[in-house]
Length: 162
Image (cartoon, rainbow, N blue to C red; front, side):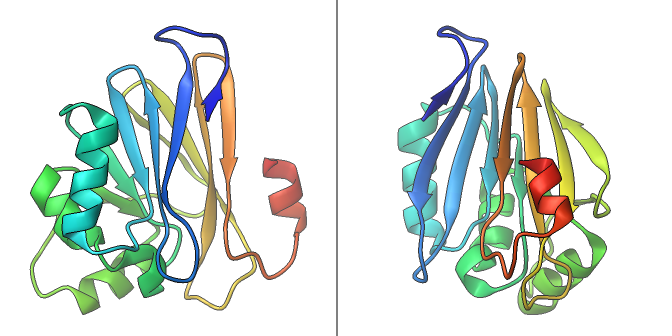
């Protein structure tokens, strides 16, 4: 899915996997590329990222929550593609507890913002049975994408983000 006007200044979203067997989405803006969730095995994930990303480096991996269908490949893809894993402290701790090897990480507190390349990212809380689940708003080039999955209910924070 492409959001915004054609050309370099457009957000592009690819669903790599979606459903109970695993979730992962690739978001691109020019040379900046985010992976949102990494819930499939790293071999399959790396192949799909390479196919959609044309060999460009991965800028970061955002994790919405620690459930394995959203995070089982997170540490491995972060290490393989030398991209930091970005999530709130509780989600990073849960991912680290499951992954014996270290990975580069950046904490993004729930409700906070950060930049990854030319993309702005803001997290927002969602209702789900995880330690501290979030959705993300990604903005670049005048376009905005609200990303949230596994919603328990549409809260005020979710409605505001959308």
